[in-house]
Image 1 (cartoon, one colour):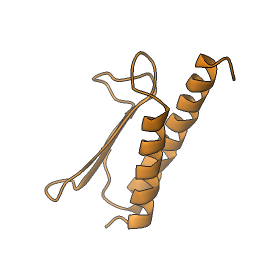
Image 2: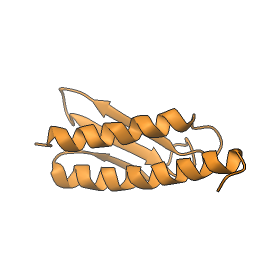
Image 3: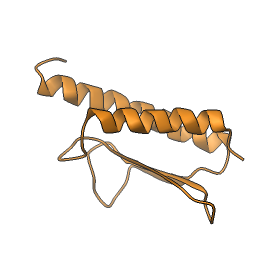
Image 4: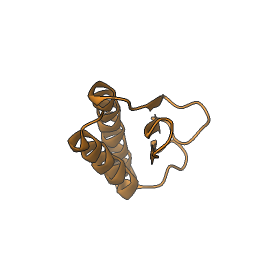
Length: 91
């Protein structure tokens, strides 16, 4: 079982990345799926934009898996912020 607190943290990161921009070109791609069948929570992400070969693509089965997904999403968020800064002449 995964704690709601960790899933909320991951969801917040996914939404923060989404708010920074669309995954076009090399802007980070991130997705999270929820279901009540099979793997109830699934997280995917790519540092270099949307493509078929994700850098991270795993079901979240427990808090440890959520921690790994959160860590990767935090990296994606940093990359996204840098790309937005570069686009506006800021680093």
